[in-house]
Amino acid sequence: MAQTKAAVPSARLDAALAGKLLIQMQLIRRFEEKAAEMYSMGKIGGFLHLYIGQEAVAVGATSALRPDDYSVSSYREHGHCLAKGSDPKRIMAELFGRRDGLSHGKGGSMHLFDKSVNFLGGHGIVGAHLPLAAGAGFGIKYQGGDQVVLCFFGDGAVPAGEFHESLNLAALWKLPVLFICENNRYAMGTAIHRALAQTEIWRFAETYGIHGEPVDGMDVLAVRECVGRAVERARRDRSPALIEARTYRFRGHSMRDPAGAIYRTKEEVEREKLRDPIELFSERCVKDGALTAADIKMIEKSVSDQVDEAVAFAEASPPPAPEELFTDVYKD
Image (tube, rainbow, N blue to C red; front, side):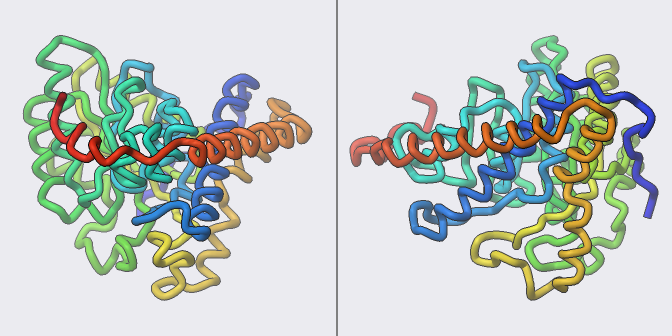
C-alpha cells in the first residue's frame, strides 16, 4: 500500500480555521449519534447509514471549496450535506419524513438535496451518481465557469461500470470533477480485497491519465491540503482527479447492522478508534495552542444544543399532506 500524506506537523494551525474544522466535525458526529438514537426510538424510518468515523473526509475536502462549487454524494451523505452548509434542522426534518425537510419529507436519509448550497444530492444506488458529477462538470465547462465538483463515493462503487465510465469521460473531456473515494475497507460487509483486483484505488487514475493520490482520511488537515491542490489544478487546467481517502467507519453499514460485528473483529474496530479523527485533531489544536481544552468543551456544548434544536424542529414539523405525493417528482 502506498504511504498516505499527513499534514506537515511543524505548520502552525490558525485558530479560526481550527475552530471551523472542529465545529463541523463535531456537528456531524453529534448529528449522527442523535440520528441513531431517534432511529432506535422509531422516529426515523427506512434506512440510515451513519458517517461516524469518516468526518475528516467531508470536512477537510469541503473546506477547500468556494460556496459556488458543487458537491454530490452517495447514500451515506449526512456529513457531506452538513459540511456544504445545509441547515441541520432541515436535514433532521427530512430524516423524520416531515414537510420542512430538505426534500419536503419525501426523500428521507438517502435523498438529501439542497440547491441553496449547491449540494446535488445523496443517491441511493451505488455508483449511480458518478455520471451525474461528470454531467455537472460538463455543465460548468459548457458555461465557461471555473467551479469544481466534489464527488464522494465509497470503495463499493469502484467495481461498478459507472466509476470507469465517469473517469473516462471526465479525463477525455477535461471536466473539473474531483472523484473522492472514501475507502473504509468494506462494501457493506465485503472486505476490499475480496472485491477489487487493485486495492490501491488511487492507481485507477493512471489508467485514465489523470492525477491520482492517496490521503490519510482520518487527518482533516491532510485531506484539506490534498483536495486543495486538486481544486487548484481543476480550476486552472480543467483537470479531473481521483483521490483515495483511507478512512474507517466506526459503526456498521447501516442501522440494520449497527456494530458491523460479523465481518470484522472487535479488536480491529477498537484499534481503529484509536485514530478517531476528532480526537486526533482536538489534540493537535491544543498542542499548537490554536484552541484550549475549555474552547473544545464550549464547542461540544454548542454543537449538542444545535442538534437538540434540530430534533425539536423536526418533531414540530408536520408530515407532508397527501396531495403533495405527486409534487417534486419532476421539475415543477
